[in-house]
Each structure stands twice: as C-alpha cells, then as structure tokens.
Length: 176
Image 1 (cartoon, rainbow, N blue to C red):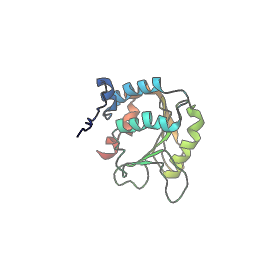
Image 2: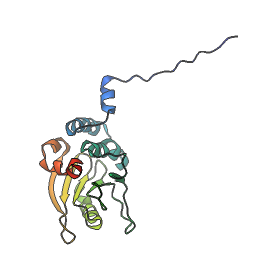
Image 3: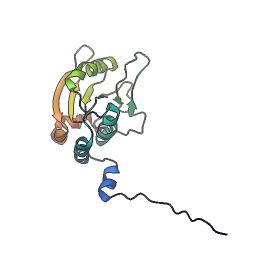
C-alpha cells in the first residue's frame, strides 16, 4: 500500500526579519524599526495600518502593556460620552485615563487633529495627550478642568529618545 508523506514546511525568515518581529523593549529600538516602517508604508496607508505598525509599538516602547486591559484601552469610551480616543492609558487604580493617544493616518497633518485631542483631554480629565501620525508626535499637558490643554512639544520620531518629556509618558512614571 502506497502512502504519501507530508512534512511540515517551516517559514524561513532572515535574522533581520526575526529581530523586527520581536517585541519592542526600548525607545531606541522602536525609533529604528519605525524608520523602516515609515519608509516602506505607502503614503496613503490607512489609520489602522499606522496604528498597528507605528503607534501601538510606540505605546509598548513606553512600557505600557497592550495586553493588560487595566493599563491600555483601545477605542476607549465611558458611560458619559460617545467619544472614542484611540488609546487610553491608565496608571494604577486610575478611574480616568492618565494619557490619551490619538492616532492619525500617516499622511495626516496633525494640526487638523489638535482640537479633537484637546476635547478628549478635557472630557476624560486626562493629564497627558499625544497626537501622532507615526512620523510626528505632539505632546500636550492638561492641568485642570478649567484649563485648556497646552501643547508642550512637536517632534519627529527620530527625536523621541532625546525629548525629556517622553519620560513623563512612560508607564514607569505612573507605576513606580
């Protein structure tokens, strides 16, 4: 009786591909990988692709655990409003988000999204906000309910590791 032998095929990946698939553990690694992603993404990449390849890895590089629903909430909303920021980051025992991250399509001019992020910061009483298209990052601070959020810095992805303000957005700033 004849038979057919089936052997599993393993996908071969280069060492470079394996490194890129690894979890991002620090900001410098993120910056290197983001440069590659930006150079290979089409100019009309959708917001979802920008989030998956650039913004979620940035959140991870800041130390936030995307798998922990008490820390990171996607398309966050509460019972008071129908607003839905892309990412809401919560420190320990926080009732409201500490950081709101609003993602835009790679080709989007961020100036057009500032009002939206500022509304999110006020409505959700978040202290920090990040507006990004994956290439550019605007960071905001919201002092109190009566204050308007203040833009603190505009920076390119390559400048993230030199910006001291980024340390205020790291998970460790809220958990340690």
